[in-house]
Image (cartoon, rainbow, N blue to C red; front, side):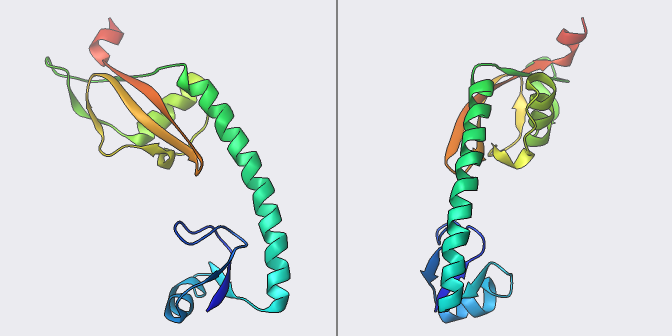
Length: 153
C-alpha cells in the first residue's frame, strides 16, 4: 500500500514521504495512530508541500542543535553527588540530573531524552555522555561527577 507519512519514522521515512508498506502494517498500525494516510493523487500534492515545510524546519532545528554543540562541547558539566570513600555514589546521576546541570551551568535547556546513557552514572570522575539533540547531530560532553563533601568544604 502506498502511504504518505505524517511523522518521521525511523527506518521508514520522513514527514511527507510517500512510501510503500505492507497493507496490514498501514491499516493496523500507521493509519490508526495518525502517523500516515493512504496516498491518493490529491494527497500526494499535499505531501510535497508537507515535505518542503519539513525540510525547512529540519534545517533550522539542525542549525540550532549545532549551536548547542558549540556551547556544550568545550565546557565540562559538573555535578555534585554524595559518594563513599572509594568514589562510589550513594545513588546515581541520571539523564534528568544532567539536563538540570546543563540548564544551570550553560543556560541551555535540553530534554533528558537527548542524553544517550546506557545506564546511570554511579561513580565520581569524568564521564563522556553522548548528546543527540537532532537526528543528524550528536556530540560528546564531559560530565564531571564530584563528591558533594568536597564541594561543601
